[in-house]
Length: 406
Image 1 (cartoon, one colour):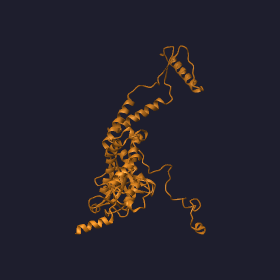
Image 2 (cartoon, helix red, strand yellow):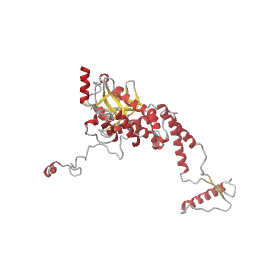
Image 3 (cartoon, rainbow, N blue to C red):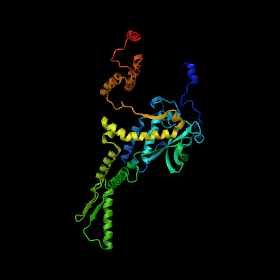
Image 4 (cartoon, rainbow, N blue to C red):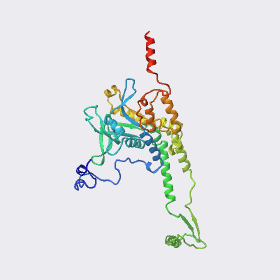
């Protein structure tokens, strides 16, 4: 682009602005993101948030795509639809597809049930079921009706969360598969949350700055005069401690002071440790998964017992609500794909690549893409053939055909 064209068409965010453009009518402003999910029931004050976040991150790392299947119900190609764009690229103006799935899982684990609301569609869902989803939002279900739900959704046009009533047939309602462990009133997770809240209260009381002293005076306090004298003595010691630079006070030689704010022995911490280990076992999570030191067998068990039920619940509900019977009869579906090589170390990747290419399971370019390398331009790199065997020559094939003809 020449200098003249650059001067005519170039744009700068600070210089090319109408001073009255953002002066009025751009909606309410916030110091924090208004559509961000807020955890309830004190989860944000405990270690429960780290468990929710770990599960949500692992679920959102799995690719969900709107696909076309072949006659044997095998994956054939990815469809270029608005629904696939929401799941893989951009769910709405504020969230990517991955951030949206993470929001869905976090809200589902916290509330027990969550709604995936198509906020923009190409056709009216009340008139036809063959519509394409353009944008989606996570909603909190407030009230349940026979055919409808009242759901709270963030409206990006007004910048506010609004309560709307929608048909159940147009909202993907996803219930937590681990509801009995996490969201039931007396479940392991809720008991752990209550114990952690009690531990927070005890910690706040022990660190409140109070001395909790008992002063034993050298006389019996039975009359009103003695009580006033004892009260004056107590106030005198308070003034000495508060007015001293280092918090030092003096007492009479006949007075004795007993301090009460020593740690009281209780089994609260043992109960928390017991509930935490029980919760880990019920969720299929170990401490090694949380700190990233788990081996492949532990991670496989975690993905099969914890992640797979959640991602399957999301995908199955979207199939049921966002795909019509006609679309399903045309073998359109929603599938999720987990990268099996994500947890494979480099030392084992070479052996796996050799077995896959030698047994004609994957081509060389497909394995290069797994490693992260650019595909080779050699046409043989796209052939599904064992490279360790010599390629049959053309003359040998023609002579074989002549023998058969004879």
